Amino acid sequence: SAVISQKPSRDICQRGTSLTIQCQVDSQVTMMFWYRQQPGQSLTLIATANQGSEATYESGFVIDKFPISRPNLTFSTLTVSNMSPEDSSIYLCSVATGGGYTFGSGTRLTVV
Amino acid sequence: KQEVTQIPAALSVPEGENLVLNCSFTDSAIYNLQWFRQDPGKGLTSLLLIQSSQREQTSGRLNASLDKSSGRSTLYIAASQPGDSATYLCAVRQVTAGNMLTFGGGTRLMVKP
Figure 1 (cartoon, chains in turn cyan, green):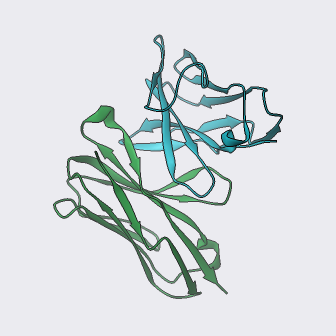
Figure 2 (cartoon, each protein chain N blue to C red):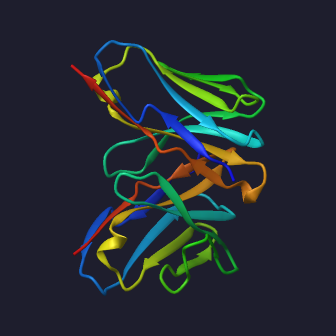
């Protein structure tokens, strides 16, 4: 299965600033997925990122708040913009491989 | 809309016990079901993947079963160890809805020495 390198692993940010999270996959994949996991909650899909087209956002998530880039088949970034304490969560990227899904190690974001 | 439920939400057992975690889903039109482990503040580690045509999968002390018609899966952990302490998540992959993954709320397991 694919191996995903996700950075940063954690960060503490000031409200009103932005943070960009990176995911690098060791093989080419068509779709990459970005999830949010709020404290004590399960995972919620933010958006699906396809190379060469705009990301598809789930209900409740918008591009202005969570812009995504997908410049090639092995890399994607998610930016959390104009952060507030409510954005404090674990953010994870994922790819589909061999029928199942592989996840990055997660980015633990705390907004103060 | 698919809904995935995991019972119990939390479980505390002494070391050495065999235990069963439950996962149920409302829409049986799934492609597969996957069990993950998550350590606090970390990402997800895939444990077992069961295709919709399969009944069970085994890996070491772990055994996962799937009854698609009744919308249920179980994860059996034999001879539990303190290192098994983590949150266990099940997720179903839909046949429709762009192969979307829907997660359960997780079972937080504590194995006491």
